[in-house]
Image 1: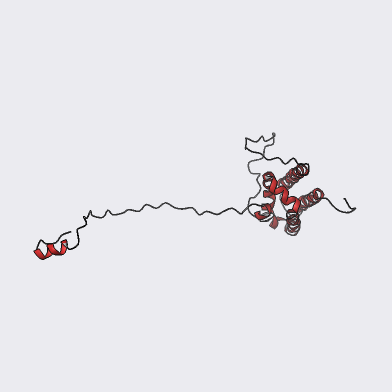
Image 2: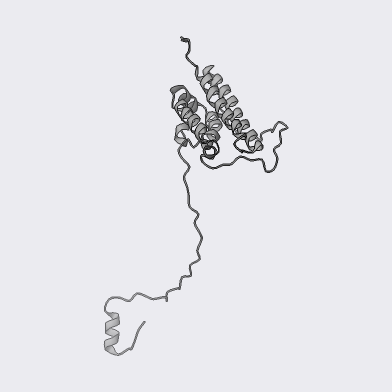
Length: 188
């Protein structure tokens, strides 16, 4: 039953991600580079579209789980060599401080809802779609049902030279002391 004024989950996703991209676009007056704004807004819009399609499939009972990874077609879109977004954890927060933090908290509340949690549990695609957005807004991976990555330290191989020990034949008890008593000298 829909009550007047109640916003559906799909509309909330659209409102949050649209607001985030508008906040980023407004930063052009604040000195943020235009190319970076285009890349960030493009990423947010792609995440929004993919998430809304996955949510619609999930509600229709058609969750798509891909078994194998093949070569992906780029669709004719080529990026410039230097046109890449940063990859650090929470990199968007310093660029758009107050607005990004607000939208991050709204996204956190959205990700904690039962329907989104069910979607994340049923579809690994949804986790892959939301992971870059969570990383740029400093949301922990546990919200997506993913354990944090294990940090493994590199081990440096070290060569160790071992001196071979002289070959010794074990003598029965008392033989060495008897040989010394008899004057046979030093036995090794």
